[in-house]
Image (cartoon, rainbow, N blue to C red):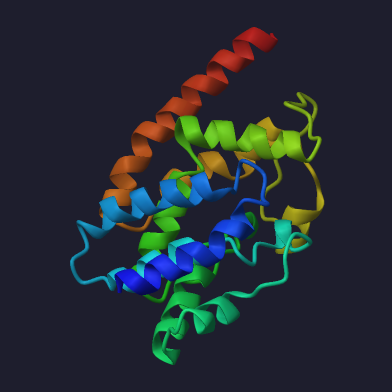
Length: 208
């Protein structure tokens, strides 16, 4: 297991080093730590599938499709994953995307762990930093007091409009606490969610 994970990490390092700071290798490392915490409370989960899914979950992110051409399946084949491992990893990764609230159903505990681990890194202090890093990389406004948060979006609608970063909090980040699946993910999300609420309260005071 360790050899396959190490080989996978070597393969993805060059890919994530091309991404901006919101989805770089540091993000992957933080998600891995989150996944390890949740794994410790879910003894029935396949650790290899979880770790590979964490390492590969952003490889085919549509936001970075112009950066590289490698696919998840190709990378799994390259490191010698069996068909069963590949299918399970792909299934777990498919569970991760938010896409305006149009996420796919979770079909395994591994998918639940990876989704919660990734979403934990989208909230709290790190989540705030990542949101503004991504917004800055895309030239988005910090906030727009005239902009209303959208609800009930399709995937294309969610990805098409480049809203201000603070609007993104209301369209996604503040919703994630209630969308956690695992018990440990839910527990860890509360403190991070509360910190975001405090941050937005202070921001409103300074803006007003």
